[in-house]
Image (cartoon, rainbow, N blue to C red; front, top):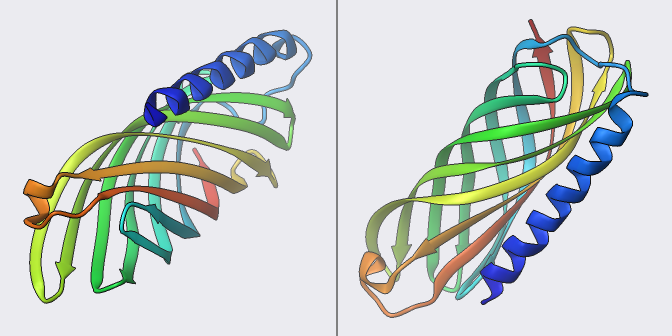
Length: 191
């Protein structure tokens, strides 16, 4: 039920942003030309939910393409770091692919939203027992790009990933549905 409400709220928010971007499109100026971009980010992750809670350092490398000034795709490799809590130790990594919507406001500033899939792998240790799981989950995020010029931008971003493990995957009866919230800062190079 909670997931359904969260997805409905996100859908409404995305629709409102899309409508607002349509109204602003005529008055806005593109920040960067369409094309390819690469970058990296460092951030803090907050793992929260079920029987597990901790903060981690997150590293992400990404590559993307803008089809025009308003839409693109982005792929990323993400290391969510190592987390520990109550006898649990987790090392989560993943790869993602997302559709990205851009809303340029000036030559040096744009807002973006994205949604896509995360393919994750988790090495979990519980009371000395080790197991490895993987899966695919939906994720979404939003952020800002501040352009120094048409080639280099500073990126600020917030993302939410949900990782669900069943008791069968872990081997013991615990609740391990967790939300991983990531706040990060990075650099983008446009080509």
